[in-house]
Length: 192
Image 1 (tube, rainbow, N blue to C red):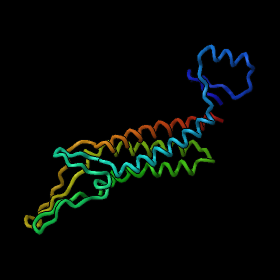
Image 2 (spheres, rainbow, N blue to C red):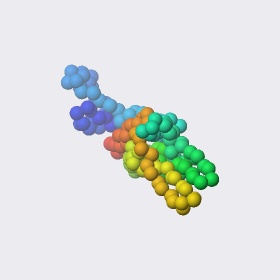
Image 3 (tube, one colour):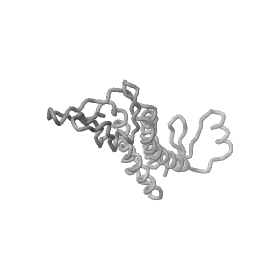
Image 4 (cartoon, rainbow, N blue to C red):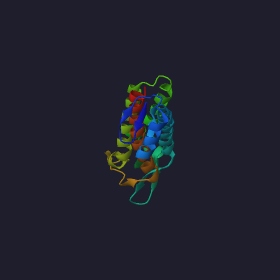
């Protein structure tokens, strides 16, 4: 199956040289969907692994200039712990999903290599979409906990700041994962 740039589908047949010359003169680019499917498979898996590895990069930059990695925001970190007060970052499940859903999507793509089931590709795209949403919204839900046992109070203020470069690249890679997953689904559907 071939896909022309003008989104015209043609069955894969042997065409004579005259027809090939006409295509070249018309300026149409044809893409072999079988080859594109394999490339998209590799690209989607690589993007899933990249997003998961970016958990070690700066995730959140607070307004005070402190840099927090995705690992610190995801699994938590103690800031200080004294007898009368305690501050720490708790485990954030949504950040965990944001960084590890793409790794699961890459595993699903690897499992789907020989089968080429379009539903798996669609599920992979949904996983990347959820990852994109969770990563972009990290500043909206990432908080730390202040406990003061003497006053018996617990407050959970947000870590005010913006996304670090690691989260920005992870979000962009997740968005590209959505696109490549949908294109892979499209190539599996029309490529046969």
